[in-house]
Length: 331
Image 1 (cartoon, rainbow, N blue to C red):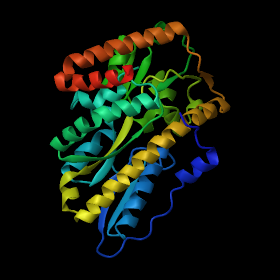
Image 2 (image 1 turned 180 degrees about the vertical axis):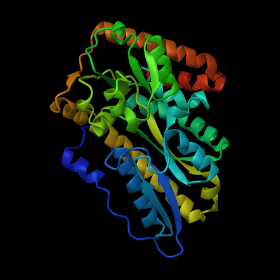
Image 3 (image 1 turned 90 degrees about the vertical axis):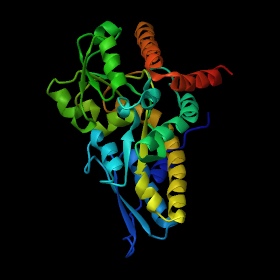
Image 4 (image 1 turned 60 degrees about the vertical axis):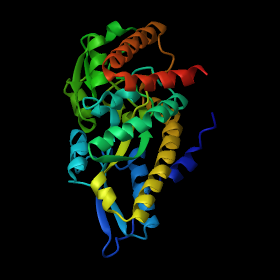
């Protein structure tokens, strides 16, 4: 594993330069982005849009709308599919009710570090691309979140400490995880999390250190358990009809900018992981990196059950993806 870049270099990568005014006659697109403007995934999106504009000499102008100002999470893919907007980012596993393939990166303890997450994406990407095209949308790029870990308003030593707690959910896998832990799953959008904790609607959540920083989690929870359960992704999708209407040179420029955005996003996500965990501690949170062996063992067992259930409903083609991933792990 290479050394993570220093924070000055990281900040330089994150700088979002302003976009120039669009040229007369340019194709203007709107891009919905869920996270706040300062989040690294939003900044990658701004950089992507700038690269597209530069590569097309201003003829394809993508305006990025962060913080769910256009659409909230459940609305983005339908809006892109209908063509209400041309492009948007989606938390992939939130689409799990449409097809099990979208849940693959969120199966607990299947891929828990970036090397494993890259391998899992390498063997599953083509299946995701094909499934999206069925609905009339095309994958442009994917950016991983830092590993998902537990934020709690109380200490945890075993899974019994989670029993009956209100567990924030954001996809079917997390809801199932909460049920198996005898907790109460509660679906809460990211922007509503702080208020939900303050009002007692949520006691615990599984999310990334990046989201913890965005939400200023130290204001409403006390403990961060660095369990690193899985590394989910946001995917950027484009309406296929809008994409095909572009001249070939613009289609090529958009896909090339997507490749650059994906490389940058993976690098930034990895580099931010340790830094943001340290920042949570500096803000006064109790950061636990040496997880109690019993808690880790019990969480891993629940993760294995969820993976087995996924295999049972995913079908043979999807099951072969996990087999290919595990074969690569054993080599």
